[in-house]
Length: 361
Image (cartoon, rainbow, N blue to C red; front, side, top):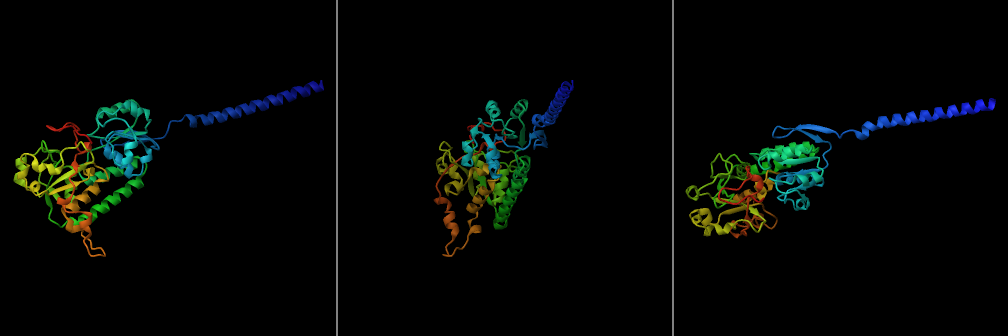
């Protein structure tokens, strides 16, 4: 009997130990389950069009639906997080290697969803509201910027975006560098008489930029002023009006595309253009298409234009005593005649230009 009692006690103790271990394991599992099944952290932000956006934190996977936004991502050093962009996102060259999700107006929602982005970047005026709504329906967050009217607004927008993407220090650094370079330009050309120019977006029909566009502001910062005084963003101008106003220079945005419109040197052969002195005398300024995109790179285009319009402000005397500016910026009539184009980013209605052809990039 004593042996039987001892055996029962041993069994009872073993059962108690098993039950205690089971309870401990269950307790641990229950305490761990909320962590493993918890939803990712989110941050509520208000984008530039006033929408409240719920963004997963941190933002590790980004899709960009505008060339300017793609350029800004690279400027912020976040290119490794960019998993997709549009067929028009061609700068820097590495952006062309990213997975393409179609165009800006009609991107493939299926391709975007397949990339599992934490955030899709869009811009009002280039991308459609329907795209943002469709992404929301798929449970994909999108952050929208607005079309800027000044270079300063481009800087502000870049800083806001850097904060949304979790790198405010990078945004502040980019902004400081842009402002430093613009301040240097102001010191060089601010006191000089502004050159009267015609910025040519398209030649047939002739389309330029209005006074309230960021391109017009870029011209002003380069020591120029547009002869077109219009409240419209992209006004059509008559050749007769250009001949009456006689700009000192015609300004074009260069393009690497071989299918672009005629080279600037061909303008003199087009009907009517010979009555414009700047055409007859080959006073052209050709700058990077960065001027068309509201992104940090626009400052480079502004600097280039300033050097072409006001070379005297950039003359430096190196050791050999020769003027360095001559080597860096040959006379305008000795420059090659590149193709010119305009960016999809600059046309707010992203539609076909009246009488012209559809925007390409």
